[in-house]
Image (cartoon, rainbow, N blue to C red; front, side):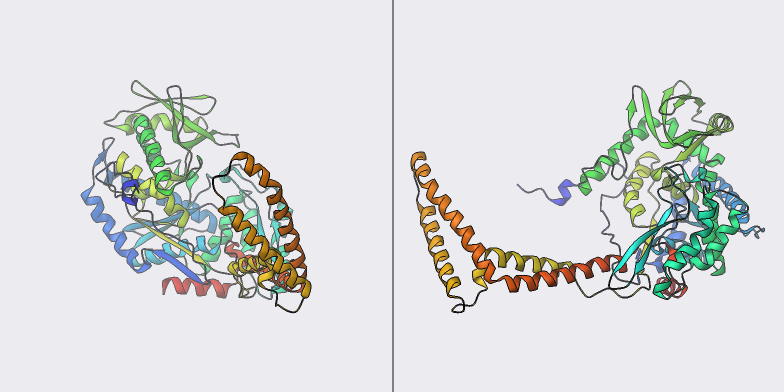
Amino acid sequence: MTTSVTERQPRPASPYELPWTPQPLRVPTDSPSVLAVPRIDLAPELVRAHHAWLQRHDRHILGRPLSELRDWARGAALQEAYRYTEELLQRPLPRKPFEHVVATGHQPELFHPGVWIKNFAVGHIAEQTYAAPLNIIVDTDTVDRVQIPVPIGTREAPRLQWVAFDDPHHREPWELAKVRNRKRFAEFRSEVCRLLQSWHYLPLLADCWRDATARLQQTDRLVDCLVAARHKLERRWKLNNLELPLSRLCETDPFRWFLARILADIRRFHEIHNSVLREYRQVHRVRSTRHPVPALATRDDWYETPFWVWADGEQQRRRLFARPVAGGVELADDERPLGTVRIDPDDATATALPDLRRLSTAGWRFRTRALTTTMFVRVFLSDLFIHGIGGARYDEMTDRIIARFFEIPPPEFQTITATLWLPIGPPFDVDPADLRRIDHGIRELTYNADRYLPGGVYPEADALMLRKEQLIEEQHQAEQRRGLTRRERRALAPANRRRFLEFREIDAKLAAFAQPQRQHLLQLRSELLERLQANEILTRRDYPYCLYDEASLRALIRQAFS
């Protein structure tokens, strides 16, 4: 009996969630191309609909109305965003009254245009809806690499060279990372531009890296230098988003309240999180225990929380564990106790916030993980959050956690990404299917050359093909014999073995007659493989935005938002 797709889907556990319906989101393959779900022109309506959503679901959470919590979180976030953006620009910014907040976020790395386009989407939608355009710098993630791929060579034989802008950082959180090699950081621009000279275009790096090195004269924080390069370029392009490091957002009282809300009901959150994770893996047929996120663990009567924690002076993030006790929760990391947080279910502000502030003053840093980052921003801060494809897939989980834990429908979000190739030459008109066809032809000429040799040209080959037909007929007759005893089958084994070896010998001799055709296919295969490998570099979409030329990027932005 066949199980239908519907029967395999877990049933919604909350009246506020929809059935699991994974979105068929795929990265655009052509260049330039943009994917937006829903369409960008529908985004302003999503922002306005969010207020109607809030009026319908303005319930109390730990003693405070959701609308009041959102005003509180938005005020604190925008205050920190203005403060940080002014630090980047080294000048004050005029405060504006905003009706809404449109937000996105990513790590502070040198990301590709498919990520960068989210920033322009935020600015575009914010202009249409009188919203504050907010980019959240996810500096709580760890530094993965401090080098970028740069294409060198020619269109016919391109290759990649990795160029570092700093010494390795060994996966410390971005917010703690400092520029370790000032000389390498300063010379990064000239080295990359030198490597790109053969392609005859001017990358954005030639301009924007000056802002990175200028910022380095004021601070050694790697995040600030990288963000300054991008943000000042955006300002020159009339994109006036506000920048907010996630680390600063996590030091605000609204975030501490959010942390207290989850800690207050950690058993239930833990169960919901892992249940949703199991359903996600069932729906997507994922076997990995690490994808999309690991399950939250238990340790005796301690529950792993969806937060990181570390102490001042440390470079490594640790998991935060909580143990419910009378009147609150005890906290610990993987190795040490942190203290107790009192939580009054009727007024968390009066008890939990002072305790969490005290822990922060003592040097403990509480930070979100991926799902809790977007959960906080979507529910308590923004009117529309803009995801890339990866974040949109993960938030299939977040939607259901929001519905089951907070008992509200999850706010909608926008998904946008893009593909843009570097101006280093068009790809070759080849396809991996061509390689499969050639490989099939080579195999045929190796084992079935008789099918492709003309008759009457090679007398020896004609004799071999005749003998092969006789062997095939003998094999058919042998296969038709039924009901043989084991002794009879053993008696036939030597003849079967001789026939098999003669088959192989004949095929090898026939293949020698087809050697010119085989050599031709091998040469075609070599040329095709070179072009396919070249295409991998020519059509790679994850080159950093700063390697592109201004004209190509501006054309992509016009295509997305015109």
